[in-house]
Length: 239
Image (tube, rainbow, N blue to C red; front, side, top):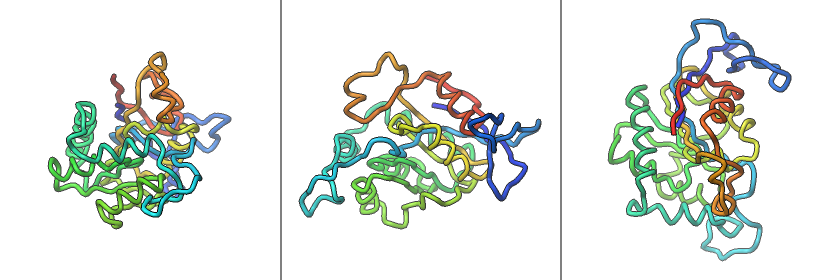
């Protein structure tokens, strides 16, 4: 997980957040002293790399124009709370801690998958609204059917500071992880908290990662560097 602090901007209408500018990100600037701190825990399921579903024909009861991938099937299978594991509960606890610390009004689950976080929140933090963003048509349809279409969040909308954003085991599915996180940073108002989790250590990469569409695993240093380049200030990381 990672807790981050977003840097303030000199030009709020453009919502530019950055650390030190470089040739790749000339629009980012050095943040002056006394920046506003924002707690962030990151994990995104923005599947911008490999497709989440195939283009082969499917039966009429399949909620997309493609056959669900292994990842989609896995997510649909763990909608039942009895399928949740210790790792799920640990992640959900991180989100609850961040929401309580920030007095958040809502949690936005980016790359929501099965939406198990929303079900857990309904029992453990019922006062915080659950919203989701999911790029997989299969999973998005299932989420809307379960939580209601009003829980779907616009993937282009600005995200207010009373929101805790989660990206739980998502970034590893994105080929251009830096591009996805940079785009997300531009949507966040200062003060917005982001909770991120990723699979650890590239030496543990296996055929299971390949099957699930993972591009990589991360070390703490890699996560910190990635987030700082995307425009976040990292407050802490941990295995």
